[in-house]
Length: 448
Image (cartoon, rainbow, N blue to C red; front, side, top):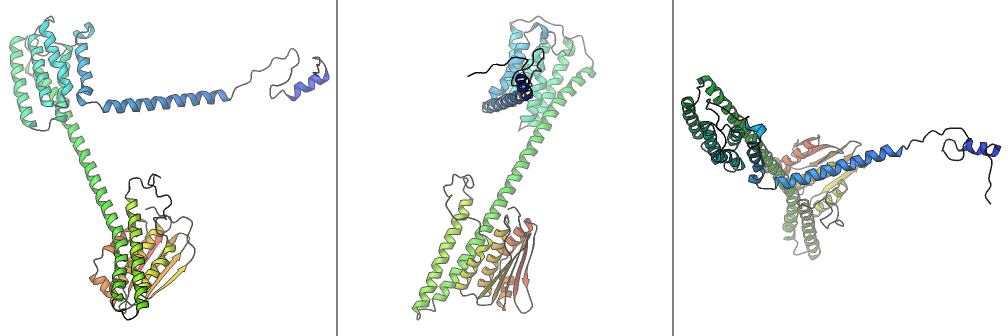
């Protein structure tokens, strides 16, 4: 049942006071309500303006893409049409270029031909710059000698700028020919016109040279930018090839070295079938690991890598973590190398590329130990700090000295580059007694 209250009742006044802030309820008679401010309205307007701006930007980009996909002749034609139309407008007819003082002549059919000759060749000023300049120059000469003085005569400066920017061959010969043609035009105009001084002809010639020089400067700038981009592209390709070669060296050399050592040992185990089977199994396992690492490396070269389109979301991680160093040590032990492994500390949550670099340091050091100090005692120590990873691999025996002498040095040089990129420290060299030590301090959290 609906309850009605009068305006002067206490219940009514209490109800209105309780809802004054929200604007709800009734108000005593005679009070003027203050219009509420819609705070959402400015935000809504701003949102609509942002949406409209984004739509305009998107449309502008689409139109720009369509425009630049058009042929260069189609893109250069509108300016020539603009000069063509402007030459027939009464407001622009008296704004033509005049040199030589030849009396003005009314436009006739021949004037239309001259205007077309001055304006339409601008459409091919980038595709055939020499032809465009020759046609426009011929139209300009006819325009001045016949006294039309059309608005389209201003195309001469534009075509000189464009030709100076895009003409590739015989530039000096072309400039010399244009200079001779201008001298002949100046002499003809001095006989037909009221007579301008040589200074005026020279000033106009300098203006034309300025247009050509501006085009030449644009050409030089464009060539310098193209050379810079080419140089950057070459450097990028070389750096990428070096990186790929370094990765292949790290992956292939270690596994193949271990397989060769294991296969050589298997030749002397024919009298012990159990040990022979164990050695062949080690060769097989090493080969499988080599194939897996190579597959991961090739996946990194896949253009779809990291985009979720490679179809390898269920594959194991491609970046070897420091925790896999133990697997590396076990593989080296199975190849007949006595390796002692110690690991201190806990790896930080975010190591960036540091774990991969630490893994590669141990991998390269163990590979050199297998190649040049096979059978010598090897110590691997990995220490995890809060901000860095320290790796030390030492090999006893005189055989380690051969690594520094007979090795190609590609692996150690690659390790030094990896560590230097992350801002760490790397050292490798022989020690007293014929051993060889590799040390690396790698800041954690470094980017690859």
